[in-house]
Length: 125
Ligand SMILES: [Zn+2]
Image 1 (cartoon, rainbow, N blue to C red):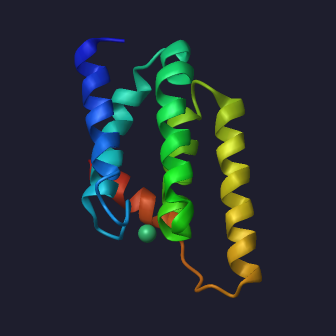
Image 2 (tube, rainbow, N blue to C red):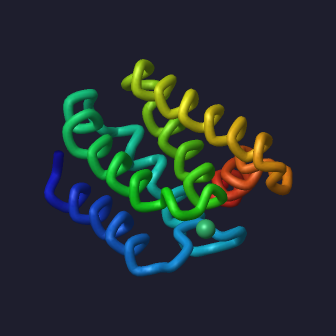
């Protein structure tokens, strides 16, 4: 991976650790992660698995405290991996579905996280 690509990706992930909530509606986090998609699509399978997936997994762990933010991150992770690493993409999808089932059991407010992510991606044009 080019150094400039790597540092851009790392910068976008680093910023998320500085916020109390990583992906509130209409936030910089959603915009940044939508902006990341074209870059991610150019990564090789090797770069995706060895550079991006660890960053995603760490941030997913970090967002354990907020199912709203974690849900949106899981949707992004699923989309990032879908073309290049289908097995990982399915893993993120399953984690997302588990999270939704947990929220349903605890009678949390129903929200369409997938739609929020697709809206952010749509604004990229
Ligand atoms: Zn949150």
